[in-house]
Length: 162
Length: 370
Image (cartoon, rainbow over all chains, first blue to last red):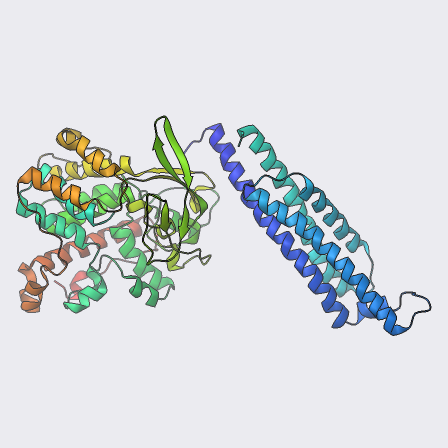
């Protein structure tokens, strides 16, 4: 069945909107996972925890060092989660037809940069590296998807005046 | 479609085509009975199970959706309620498994409709009634498939009703509820549909479940995006479709009465319908879920006779009273024969197209029903 140009544009708008919504939900899930993973490794894993514990926090007792570590990581996790939340929720809302600005895209870029940075952090344990990198790569790919779909949705909405 | 169309509208079509009142009553009873002839009913009257033309929800919930279960479901629903439009449809870039389901999408004016009507030629009134039910449903249930399939039958929340205004249509979003016991309210746009179920073979994804009862309401026009249509919107214009279904039924009935030598697709008896067209358009357009009263009034005005209401067990006693070998002359036996013949014909056509989704036709002699 042939379709007019406008029908194709509306079809693309529906397609990219749906894509954006799904990508946004993945971003939210990755944010939740980032927190769970961090604390799971801290309290259940050994390698990362001990590596952190070996950092030079001079003249502090081990207990204080641990408390400081937990606090730092907590703050780090909250920031990470908020980044994912803003990026993901904005994408979901844009995909559902509620117009959003560009903030969620900016946060998506920040999340992607932090994922790339995480990938760059070297660790001697190759299995640990692979385990980490799978989610980071997912976040990067998802971020690209959000940016691409978001731009397409905004462009199509402008052209179709919806 | 609902009872108002399958029973009363079919009666009207039959009398307009020239059938007598008693003949039209038999035809419209059978057209409506297609929506009731379940295995449960058949077991209660000791009838042949293979003659089932529909299934209860309770029957389907008990069924497994393995290959055999899916075949059992498909052979009933595709044969009687979702007649495939094009068994040889092509869809580039899809798997064989997907294509088998894609080809089950129903729609009017397919080759199978012609086969269905021609099978009823020089046959019993029961066969005529079954053919009319099947033909009518090709219009109402278009764009859905009579096989459980998420990738074909699913829809999303893009569902807008198109409400006529002075200069066109305005769109009102439809938000479906999922309580099957809830009463629908067309005035407020409150409708129910089956719940989202991402499993490919779930019963929730059979036919038009995801669109609720909308295909069966004659007044409604709506826009939606079915899963198979690659994000393109479909606009379903029920007033247009119902009118065409009625006119095509009249044409088919004229053919079956011998008033024309052949039945052609995309042909309608507009001349015969013309005296009643305005009234039919009006009653179809009224925003309500049941048009029984108006169709009944029209039919009774045409013939001057009273159309007795549909009574499911009208012929049960006659069927139960006789022994199995004496059932040949009973009303229901003729219906069962016609239903099984029709089902076998459709399954055979599906098999010939290289699709095993409905299994193989059954050897009716070995079923012991004839």
